[in-house]
Length: 443
Ligand SMILES: *Cc1c(COP(=O)(O)O)cnc(C)c1O
Image 1: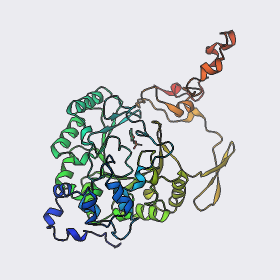
Image 2: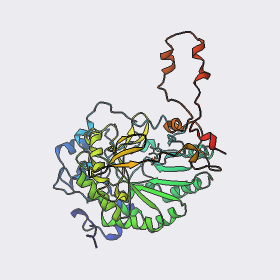
Image 3: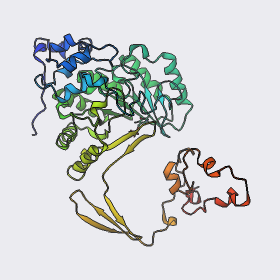
Image 4: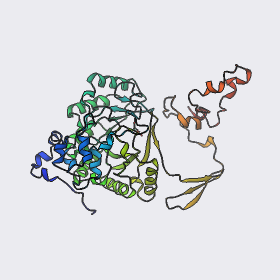
């Protein structure tokens, strides 16, 4: 048996009866948010006290359970850094933005971000159990004046009903699992009434901040709305406790697939040994590492940023060195709404017309001999298989012969150079020839 996971409680909570400690409502209503309260659990540094006493800072709230995971004698404790603000939070940096992912621009109705062809991000609340200092949505999260209204929820549902290409709805916020149980259930059942919604996903840090919320009763409610997947958010092995293990066990036993999304944070987890221990502990509690994000260009998060190279270095140290199940994808969420872009070390070293040269994690360099008789006509036929709505083929559209190029904005006007329309400019001369065009094998 591997070493069991620990359970912790800060000394000031030693006398709290177990029924209270294990009650999520007690955890929520006893959250700490002032310098005075927090100082009773951990001695504050000047920088932290200054930040906590500053007006207008992104909201602070910490559950008694989560603050108990902090080593009070370590000012750089990785759990502490994620939830206790520091003066550095007030420092601006180059390229800092309020809405760095341009989510609001991609919202057809308030709180619904439709960025990708077949799935949407649905923001259902602005509240969380505790507030991550590097929150990508700090522009709306935590502010009680910014909650989503009933009519906005109805607009979201209406949009989804009328948008049949959406087959996957990702509930986030804020944290969907802090919603009142009745509201959460109404939300799930309203989504399930829409026939084209195939899967529902929940993104939640509640299991990490307040594992006692994941009661058997909640798991049974969630299981009524399968297929339902969940991503949790763990950044450091210290966050994996006996309570989190048990919460994940309850979720997986009702058939909810668990993934983890973490953020690469300077001073918290920007180290291969920490990352390896993190992913190992995650797979032990049956959570599959899903994404490791590069920190967004968001206000307040400057001191957490690392170069992208740090993430590539971490991926180099994971892939091949450990179980494939334990390896997340490293993602840069492109500023300006470009969406998630996977980044990794290069494994393909070179290629010719019949051979590729690859290297593995050990630096072993090898060859793969390719078939010389493969033709497009040999590809699988896809009669009867649904194809995505046209319009967002992207780079794959180039491979498929739909388009010859993708042009930057203003490209044609620039290259027209105010010239005249003449015979050589006839656009009908420049049609794709159709080789490799999926159309030829379509129904
Ligand atoms: C992250 C995200 C999704 C889901 O992305 P996956 O790569 O499918 O996990 C969907 N919509 C938006 C706007 C997102 O930011």
